[in-house]
Length: 195
Picture 1: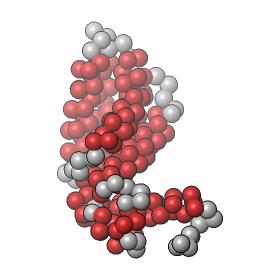
Picture 2: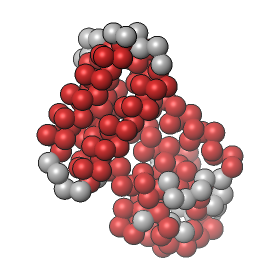
Picture 3: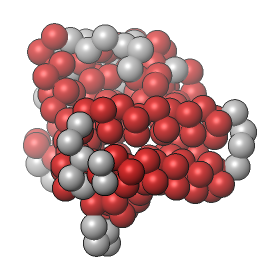
Picture 4: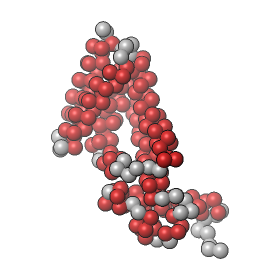
């Protein structure tokens, strides 16, 4: 039996899983999600290929874990950004601003790369739940504004944030883009709410 490198078997397994996840994340950041193969992750982690299958059914399963971890990270980041909000419009403004700061720091490129890998069927619902949880505070705030067409308002916000994201990715200074996007979005939402 191989020697464990942690105080318990459970801790050892978690350590190994974290090593594999870190190796996969490094590959994704350096070379893109397509570089995440069982062989490449094993080599980067310094483990055997067979050890990966103790934790993940495939490289796509491993990528699904990376996506879920990133969704959790982003959700926490958004929750922290909106925690001081005092009304729904401020919640939406802070949510948009933090989303665009996520674009600014480049971390969203990891998500774009990871989303090019089709997750195993049995992981799709888990990822969908993560996406819904990410958007829940925004949906809740929109419902509190009094806007009748929430789906239309959400589509409007998506367009504004997409446009600002493209401009930030193109090299425009992030803070003016964030300010312009939030000003435009909130003015539009207030107009919709007063109809």
